Image (tube, rainbow, N blue to C red; front, top):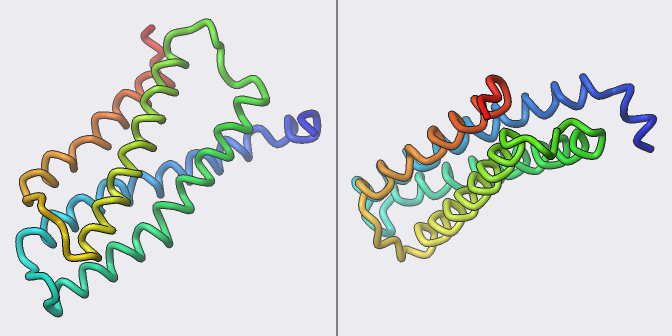
Length: 149
C-alpha cells in the first residue's frame, strides 16, 4: 500500500497543509470566542446561547475534522519516510503537534463547560490561551522549514 501512496506524496502533503491551515484558523478563533463569551454573555442569556452554537459548530464542523485530516495525512507522510528521525527538528515538530493536540482537547473541555454553564475562567485566561497556538505554530513552521537544529 505504501508503494501506491508514495506516488501521491505531494498530494498528501498538500492535503496536510490545507488541513493544518483550517485547524489553525479554528484554534486561533475559538479562544477569542471564549474571551467574548466569558466577558459579555450571562449564563442562559440569548447571547450565551448564540456563543454556544458558534463554538460548537466551529469545533465540530471545522476544528475537529481538520485536526483528524492533519493527523491522517501527517502519519501517512511519516509512514512514507518524510522524517529524519535522527534530527532534532523532527522531534521538535512532533512534540509541538502533540502539544497543539493537547491544547485542542483543553479547548474542547472549555466548550463543554460553557455549554453546561460552569465556566469559571475569565476573559483574561482565554486571552492568554489565545497565544498558545501562535507559539506552537511558530515552533512547528521553523522546525519544518528552517530546520535550525
